Length: 397
Image (cartoon, rainbow, N blue to C red; front, side):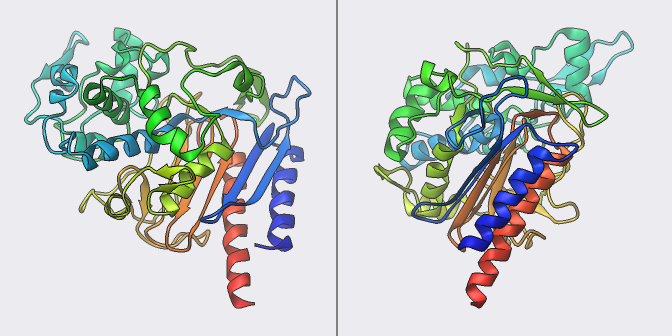
């Protein structure tokens, strides 16, 4: 990409950790199909400690975990072991126990009924099963507040035994679908999800620094979590996912480095081929990247629990669809990202994109709550825009 993009990207990162308001620290990496073409790190891992942010810093990557779980499911589809349109309870029986909630009665008790149809793994991959998150759903938040419904960050089976917000297949709703998809993978393989990831995805890709439970070496490089105050200030907070989780949460549970995730992104750029072996067939990748929602569209995310998420929407006004298992922008984005590109995010303001058309991808990592942090997200948009500006200049030159 040349010196101009590097200088611009470095300036964006350095500006963000010194501005007011600021981010504590950030790692941003861009890749082509073969290697990282930009690596940047600025600031500190935690505001109350001197350790500098470095490219090999370990992050809680939250929902950027989802695409890895989706990849594991697609491998089982390739092998004929997973039928996306069979009832998911064939593989994860407890999902068959979930009922639909139709509001609350006059005593404040949830009104539950049987769903009109079975949940399929296709619905789980597409977020159309009826499952939500308490930080994006008023109903789930009420169940948490009044009925003790556990948060998904407890990594407990109880956190997944939630009612459905609507009949399976009726619309898109972002939620614990991919956690259940992880249980489908476990039901088929007879192994914990972390073991499946390690042998079938991480080792072929050379991802040695990504896991549900941090090693000692990973813990020594972990970034701290921060909370953004209403006045824009930042405070370090004690936040860590369970070190020995009851459930390996396929929707959000991984810790890892940005460099590791770039290996995963390159696999998607290279039609399923990793640095140490093939992960997916090329035809699977080409099938998976397409919009599988039909005429349905994904909707903005309302910030119901303000400490965890602001109201959030990617590229407001542009139609967005869902693939296996990424957001698809149906039209070209203002950053320069082309129509049909893939991307998503993680709760602590981590963002990535995969542009298979041009052969590039990028990842931006911070550890800040709530989601949709205007400082971190604006910095990410500036980074992606600078990348595509540089790409256009290179093509023009």
